[in-house]
Length: 525
Image (cartoon, rainbow, N blue to C red; front, side):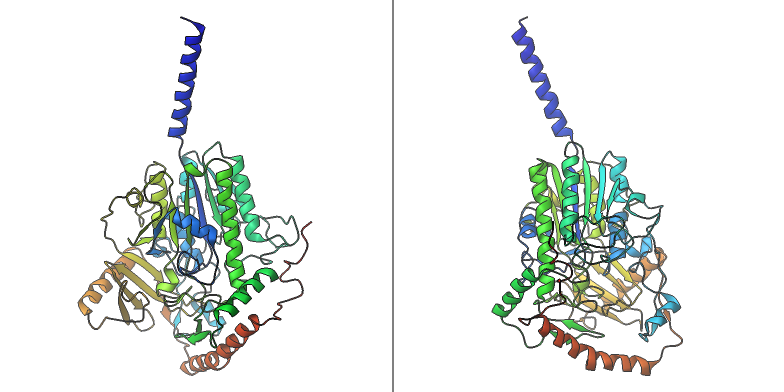
């Protein structure tokens, strides 16, 4: 036997082994979660004002779920559902961690009829998070950005993440979006550095270091949550764009409790969105540069709807009604994209209703890992859809929010099934019924015409809430109707005009928030 023949056999054997390793290597996962991003805050989903070319490109390479939902209308509950695969009423975190409940609610001086239910204030240790599931299967796990699921002892590293960059108990960026910020898990490096780009760079660095292993990277932006901040350059670009598009005389109308934004022309918010998009592009480029893009699943979504009322009244979710904190579509319908490069579901849209709890089992399934139905009990795998197959599972989706939102939402529970959505209001037990998608804007309540459907959905909803031991708000014995009316009139007569005035100031040629534009003007050395 010649030496050349032996050498040829060794080369063939080596190549076969190498191919076997490549084929058998589990896929990497990049999970991108944006804070408070509305369904229509992207170019790909219909915005004519915000510019998001990197996310738009990702969406075109992904399966787009046009009926994708967050598990809650506010942040902490939604994030807990992503981590656990459970609906909020089941895991118990039903409000953003830090919100007042019970008799403490009276200190807000809102004079509401109900006292909000108490809730779990830390991600329970008993839950096997998606990060822990990945960790148990050999994945190197990484978290960067907003956590808001507990403080010391319940940080990301306590729930399955090997590395935690910037994840603390805070729900917004302490110190703002430009360095120096105040985050013990994210040291300041350069004055004026942008937070979204810093998180992107940290994620890209992690990808580069672990490109030869298998990783689960969770990039959780603090953007586009308040405080709303951007550079003077980006503000001016969008201020001029708003001017060229025609500035509407009025920007708000009254919703039930608070004014709500009707137009997308907030130039500061637009700059914040664009910078977040730049950061997404930076990380996606890192996948390409490190040669792992073809073996990396990418998930992109938001934790709740865009902020149209309350906080900074930043965006409009029209034609969807409401926004963050609200019980209608604008509060829970989200951009929802999954890119799995080797499957058929690329550049395809599906209207199959999906929810954030589906992501846990979907990612396990895509990675050929064993599902854990006991843990992700409220989610299903979407892998068949990504493979181009039908998914004939018809199931109810549930939302439970026994609280008052900062943005004007009311204590309600919601069930959605077979194209119908029923909302149960806890203040007076009345209900609304909507047929989706024909009344997706939640402006046409059809409960009078479909009372039997409403009754069945209501019975199913109440039965499920009892099954999972949901907590409910209680009547406030100190409720003062006169004080509540006075607060409402102040909102109409004072708050609403002040919002219109500030909107015009923000769009004026000489607008300047402060001398250094939220520290963004400091030169980076």
